[in-house]
Image (cartoon, rainbow, N blue to C red):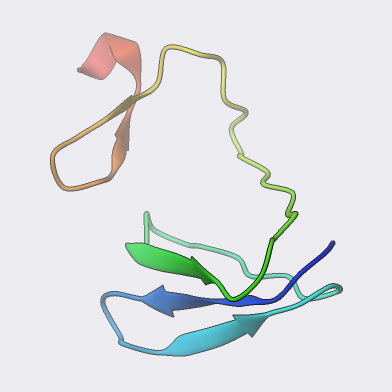
Length: 68
């Protein structure tokens, strides 16, 4: 929505440029590193929706509170 940066997939090493109008979709809990080259304003959507009790495991993936 605003700014410029990149997202690098840690499993593949591929880097994708992020600029206004670009959509980057993660699949299967892809490990990734975002980097801003300037201030970034982005929207993030979760499906299923985030409800608040989500936890991050040591490997960076998410776990629902009842599974943690």
